[in-house]
Image (cartoon, rainbow, N blue to C red; front, side, top):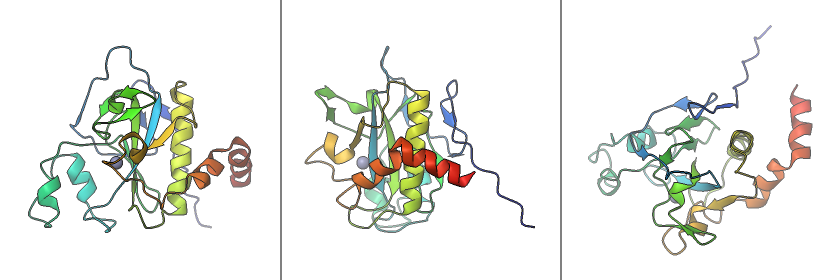
Amino acid sequence: MAKRKPRPRFTIDRASGLLAAARQVPSPNHNDRPAGATLDLIVVHNISLPPGEFGGPWIDALFTNQLNPRAHPYFTSVAPLQVSAHLLIRRDGELVQYVPFHRRAWHAGASSWQGRENCNDFSVGIELEGTDDGAYTTAQYRRLAVAIRALCRTYPTLAPERLAGHSDIAPGRKTDPGPSFDWDRLRRWLKPRRYNRRRKGAA
Ligand SMILES: [Zn+2]
């Protein structure tokens, strides 16, 4: 009989700020949040390197300042950037964590949410491997919902309503996660009833 795969643990350790289910790829691109800052917002992004291509090692390389600018013509412009996100969700749903959640990752840039500037100070940044125009995968919606729920359990100042796209907090400058991101679909995944029913069904 085939052995059942152990289920990944979607718990966040508060002390370390790490999600047990995520592959850990520590990025140097983070710093302290301002004193007294709480986590109030989750920002959804997309990324693909090179643009429109999936599955390569390049996102890990970018977020750890190891992207070789000669590996692809597009990389010359992004390789010098010092950027990061807390979490990446790959096409197959794999979770990769670069920055502990309580630390300030460098994902939003110049941004504003509900009159507050500098969203990096008080937000968690989640990248979906994808593009503005191509459909995201079911595995990505599912894992994004699971990650958001884990974050809300661990940091009670977060809530499923406190979500924004990068384009919402940096309009005119950023377009991700793009028209291809189905917010209604995510919200359906975040509804407690559906979540619980799924959980029971999976048990
Ligand atoms: Zn973005």
